[in-house]
Image 1: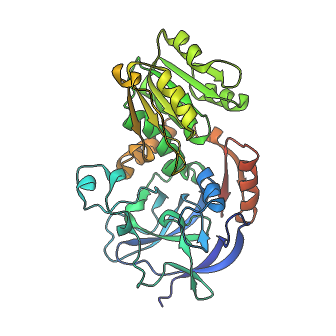
Image 2 (image 1 turned 90 degrees about the vertical axis):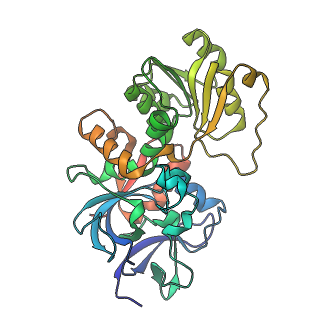
Image 3 (image 1 turned 60 degrees about the vertical axis):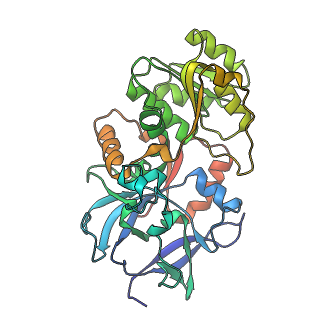
Length: 367
């Protein structure tokens, strides 16, 4: 076994259990891998979901995937990164060789496993001689991580770690859904159903794209207040109004783009009903694997469309540096999306805040 580096990680041993801090050892990076010292790690709702529901990740598992840090070592074949680089991770696992990757669509890669080590290779991370699994090939609730270089993006040094860590998932998914999946343009009308971390970034993406109307929908008044702060022109409390009727009245017939960011069939139906003729609904929220949508044919007779969105159609090494620049220019608002900055020892408290309905992220800081 290679020398590697020791560290501490929060490890999940059983679904629904609390994470446990353990001493772990990260291996030396393989030729196309990098060793990163993590400075900040966002606690995303996806981490909470995977900690409670079987999604196929073998246990024990190191959760966390929204990370920012500093490259400490690089593999022998890595040419795009160097020790000392400030980086973020983006969980768009892509091989770089398949047709989708070659035409600039890594979010549709056909060989996600290419960024992982084979079963017969030394594990990237272990504890007491047993292998641990990295969530989405990252495993960010740890002082260090080893990742394939394709998941790692260099960012400006002046970008604070506690906001940089948000770029790779919540920001990329939400901003990208508006800017790249839907290609919202000046004068368009937009509906965002669900104003959690991702939905709030859809709102920001629509604002940056120059949308004329951005209608935010949520049951939580605090979510709507934050959506308005980030660029929504109207806010509708879902349990107090007829959402579809209100949207049609505001827009004079329906929106150009409707983003469903919850993952519930009923709200997908709302999104379709709220479209103007020729509009498109974008499914950003993750549905249950067995969920079935019943869509009336009349929507298609009205030339409406429906489209799934994966990671905001993000091309990590192109889009994430752009998002970093938008923040540094004062055009992308990220500080409002961070509620608490906590040590790794308080990671379970961060999960508890999500269970209590927190909107903004808790971010783990390691310095």
